[in-house]
Image (cartoon, rainbow, N blue to C red):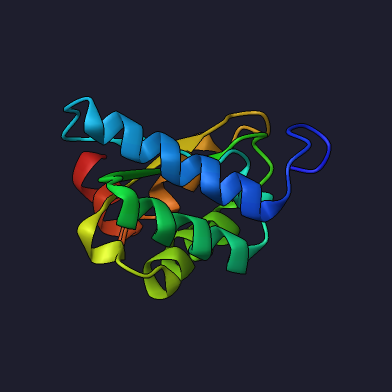
Length: 124
């Protein structure tokens, strides 16, 4: 935020809320919000901004591993922590976007499932 956007956290939250509300005002019923580089973001800030965009009308939260940096256990924990700590999360769908820079996109995607071994077993 500081170097790429040259914005403070409060400014970023304000812009995110305004843009989600704007999309809703245009009649979009499913508005997706994606916080860039969520895997390396400050968790408290992440929970806060996600809660704010839900209040503004976001219905889908896309959680990216923007630079393919996370390991499966880290990414799975990130999604679990978002579910446990984001106000209003029950009103939103969580989607993911995993990069394959380290060859872990599939593993990271499976790590967010409640029972990834069952999923693998079914499709083997």
